[in-house]
Amino acid sequence: MPVDNDRDHERVIFCVSDHTGLTAEAYAHGIISQFDKITPIYRSRPFSDNADKVAAVVTEVNRVAESGARPVVFSTFGDRTLQEQLDGSHGFVIGLFNHWMDSLSEVLDAKPSRQVGRSHGIVDTVQYQLRLDAVDFALQTDDGLGTDHYGRADVILVGVSRAGKTPTSLYLAMHYAIRAANFPLSPDDHSESGLPTLLQPFGDRLFGLTIEPRRLHAIRTQRRPDSPYAELEVCRSELAYTERLFRAEGIPVIDTTTRSIEEISTTIIKQAGLERRA
Image (cartoon, rainbow, N blue to C red):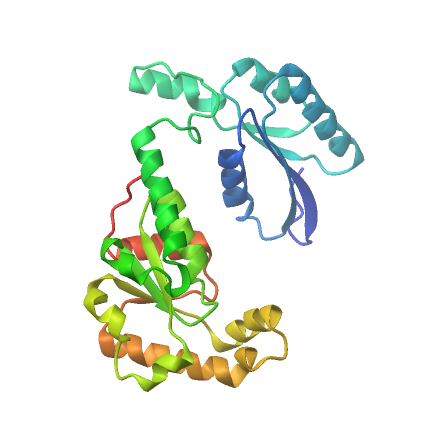
């Protein structure tokens, strides 16, 4: 039956795994986002690592299928038996590992380990420690703290308050093991000509984040309603100052208004010429 693309409709999307389920969730979000008419209702079922737990998921999937539209199920099972048990449900099941693992095994001329949680476990202790160290660095240097550590930074994110510096720094640390500091450019800096003094030795590591004034106004209003900090004209003034500074100093910049943390981080990695460590 053809899909009715002329009306929006909800669809339950299950993400099932015998470990954290992060891979299934990421894949599901990436695929389902391509269908504009779908309003997804995500249900994550991590650590479904035995027959009883999978049976409970199958019952839930079947219940959804009986009461409405057929649910879509993304799964990442290392155990073939558990995957086959889930395949027996009434959902549309996409097994991300088992449906192509045998063919890939032939191409690579190697057998998969099928161990649970390999992609999100501590497989390489050195790389894992690099990620931990990068997260610790991001926390130590968040929001202008720990400026004495800037010599170890791979990148220093600069911009007005609430432009996305902290979440981007942490994402770079957690997913790429990049040491990212972040420094807020505040109205107090407007009296200085050029970069704040403490940033001047690190000009080659700076990366600017900017944002549309009305979006910044909305974010700040949620944080501090009816405050001068959140006023639209204040937002416009601060952004105008930082953008002039970025241009004058030749600092690469990205507009975070409509970009996800993943997209912002990937863009920074590429434009700053950084190498992923983990």
